[in-house]
Image 1 (cartoon, rainbow, N blue to C red):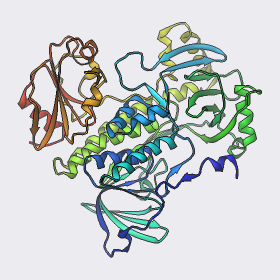
Image 2 (image 1 turned 180 degrees about the vertical axis):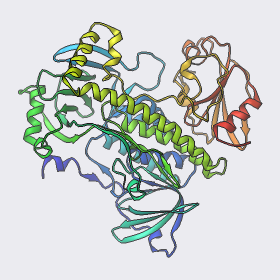
Image 3 (image 1 turned 90 degrees about the vertical axis):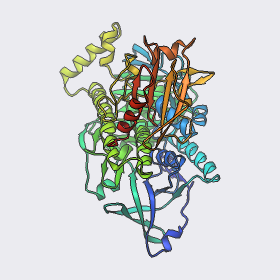
Length: 543
């Protein structure tokens, strides 16, 4: 067995077991069926189940794949995972980093800190191999299932057909014991970039595939490199047109080589050829084990809409970006965070399916932002002409001495959550406060009473929205249109970080915060009628 085969095997963490559904004449109806048990699918299923929704996960595999694949998980997704209850073991196992460096040949051009300010519970990034990520989520799910979490996982259950009805979808599922059918109020396709469900519905992508190839090599070695992200343009080793190096747990290091478009992939993936590139980069005398390798191309594409009838798409099934920038898994987790609360309100009859239109609007906005930055980064990394290369090298030379040139380099612009400017769920901004907490923006963290604001806002209370009152009298609880709000009342006295991030020059503030911790509306004082109207707007209600 080759090294490549050894590290792409899967642990049978949810091996196939025959379900009672398979012996019934009529298909069983489920509120939500999630297709795919990867990071995005499992996070969505966990979020919905924690909200009390019964969820069925169908996966054509039987557990966790062993290729490292996604490794960079950003601060905002860690906050989401903390609300779901499984972030802490990831941070403890992961490699924490905030600092990145950019080189041209062997010259340091500049360095950047992705989290230069304090007052946050989580770092800018951790590096953690995807199998660990999946294991920690699944361990948490298993522990909660023992206490009655309404989440079922069926391995070796492949969806072969989708039939859409007005009020449901009917799925044909293939198993080792033959096919059976299930029904679902809603199906969420988290089945990856090649998304069989997208193909079944005749839906495609729009966007661009870049003509270049990148070789990933994960190697285990004892090295003196610091825990930083290092990126080279035209590296001195000559092992690739660009290179990327950063550390993972267990003394494993991720190395990316830009190897060009017209390459023989099978030849490049041979162990001896991968080892040659790695040795050219890290030194011929450095001992290492080759753990995993793969070749990918840059793709910046998305669906025109992220939901079609009773089927909703999330993660790579809905959009794809180049791996540089760590926007794939991180944006997929933000898809689930945006979708779960909306689907829950719809299932509970507190909102209509019209609310899903905002999922399209907001997450397409997020995908477009990621695609824009990813495309700029790709164009900079892979010049399309000699004059483009001359321009790029001139920018790199300027960036070494002048701050203004550094944003053009783009290799330091990694995954950040987007602000949903222009969302139909946003209310008018009645507070002349900091721009970073305007309607549509994700709430920034801040220290609070020995803990942190985001974890207080993310308390799993079952409430639909949160009201944050700062230096102002607010009720202890609030409800409008059948939608409940928990209320957090705090003082900014002695807390300059909270004041700077949420008040600015304002004397007081009231924030209506969505379940995904994005700001819906903010005011300088409490106004019950304004809050009622804002809740209706944020839930796309016509009242």
